[in-house]
Image (cartoon, rainbow, N blue to C red):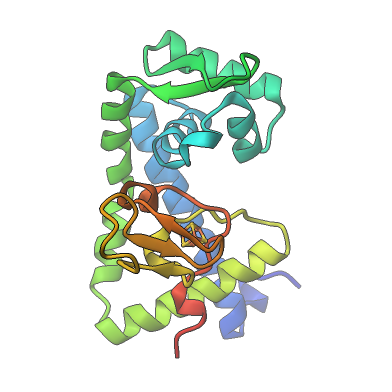
Length: 208
Ligand code: SF4
């Protein structure tokens, strides 16, 4: 019995599984369409998004390899292709000259902004739900994502503002780092709160 077979798709769980599969297909198609217009593969799109939102310390060829789940050599080839297109630039990432940093060029940053609108349609569809439905939907999806994360099927990289460890304006007298991360127990600069973090745990998992 498979949820793909409509004769056996009888329970809410089976129907929801197939609905999520269709949504995943739709999201992939939305990105593919934008990528095709920009002559970018899905991997190249993932790379550009990574270089915009990953924490600066991991914007390296090694960090990209880890994010894409590929070898260092493959990540380097992806970076090469984007570099040839003038969207990405390589640079020395720190005191260790062997660590190759990657950065978006001005053209690359503009291209990411164009690509990010791919989810606007989905956002609008969810926006048509009532506020209560949206909150419920959010909680359910967070539970599913965490379950998939525990199973090793997804890696979640999110940002501070929806994280249970985030304490906004915990240090109001500190103009450099007014926020606080309770996970690492350290102050956070405002600009650092919009970078992706692998330690993110959503507020929705613990509130009510
Ligand atoms: S754990 Fe990560 S996402 Fe959460 S507040 Fe700390 S730095 Fe931000």
